[in-house]
Image: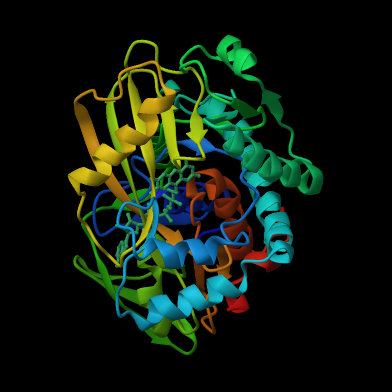
Length: 416
Ligand SMILES: Cc1cc2nc3c(=O)[nH]c(=O)nc-3n(C[C@H](O)[C@H](O)[C@H](O)COP(=O)(O)OP(=O)(O)OC[C@H]3O[C@@H](n4cnc5c(N)ncnc54)[C@H](O)[C@@H]3O)c2cc1C
């Protein structure tokens, strides 16, 4: 470890932890700073899918129309709350421009590269972390309730397999019952993506945090960064709750908070918070064995060892912190028609997270604006957990000027 450079990673979500891990592996002296506790924001109680099959970006044809209609339906799982926010409307317009088949293929290819690279990294990394990660390579199931839903999903699957070469298996109702007996009868069928995996997000975060700590990474909690100090095109320090902090290099991994830093870092960081919810309760008898999504009701089920989680929703409602009981009830109501098990267990945890959404569905990874020693690692949309390892590795390669393991251009902050 000859490199004696110091790096501060601002933001201790899964992306910040991943950056810290790879930077430390490259021999740098790393400190992670978070305004709260480590991994307690969007990285905490998400669904835990590590899903290289999610190659299709959100910008599919029709997505913008859905967003507009959702303004008039407060129960819609995908919802834009009517509001006078010019930044959000600019973001929506850019999103709308990209809702084309060509963009699905173009962005999908770039997404697939980093999804696949991350999966490889996880396969190397996870066996060395503790069992609390609950790492499983059992694939991901999509269960459809109606024939119409099955047909719609078959078109989605066709595109995923034909254009991206992702493997899947279509299961009839009877095959589904043999595959996983956690579902009610009279469903239309299912698709299984065997190349996907899953973790307990809390378990992964804590295990990765402990391992990076052991490697020598320092973590400073309850320390909000307020402003940056610049000199000659470089950042020389950060003004924080706990005084001034300085380092040679800086990585901003601020998730949904990122856009607030656009003017001081120089450049556009078009990240909007896309709010989702989850509810977690004790694992019921007859819980499904496989992590599962129900595309028609847009809800996911994550069966962990001791608990089960339902998660969903995408609300563009600004930095809203409420957890409306109606949304939690909706999660349970959406999953109920599919599952044999009880979905009404007492909540151990109800949670919201702000996904860091970009208008092209791709993450933002690379050098920030004109500042020579600042890097951005943000905008991971609905896939931050899945994309964390390759993001951290790319950032580390950029900081130490090593050959990148994947081409970084599609994720560059300069594309905006
Ligand atoms: C319901 C739901 C389900 C999901 N399921 C999945 C899934 O199954 N698989 C998957 O891959 N992804 C999933 N995601 C997406 C995933 O959770 C996010 O993409 C990911 O957590 C983003 O990580 P992050 O580190 O960028 O952000 P965060 O975890 O939000 O971390 C950002 C950190 O920056 C800190 N910060 C902000 N401002 C400052 C400041 N000024 N000073 C210091 N610190 C600051 C915050 O406190 C926070 O800790 C899901 C999201 C939701 C909402």
